[in-house]
Length: 198
Image (tube, rainbow, N blue to C red; front, side):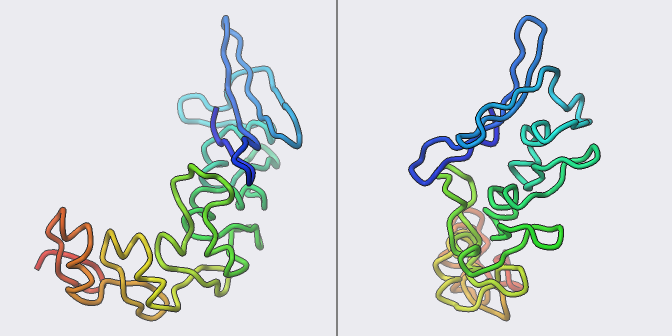
């Protein structure tokens, strides 16, 4: 099973699967709204080369879960609005949770500020939590307040606690001194916006 999603109560909402038994294979998807879609035949990837033949094929591939490429058109997996909204990297990491002009993009401050969908166990918890980029501007999440930078995971880990322009950076040695990279790697000096060793 891959690409498991959850509803707001924490119950499974969908997943993709691949099964092989006695030399026969099947793959497909299950969702609480659409039920089971099962396709007889091998997994659509062989030795790193993927040849999807349906949306169900695209839904079982890593690019659906990670990037939002969950739809199928003309032999290729493509971005979908639902795929963007559930994607680990565009939505979960950067707040780009909606399909806009063929790309995943942020459309509101809420996209930047919400944790990754309704999935309680996802690796990324949104642009605001991770990097302090809590406000949407022109389809991307940006930082507009030092307080957002200071609450971010990047502040605690990498010393990126000060707002400069529309980004959080390590502006002073004090930013770095309280960071994880200072404690564990000796990167305690602010050098051109990041913590390093002087």
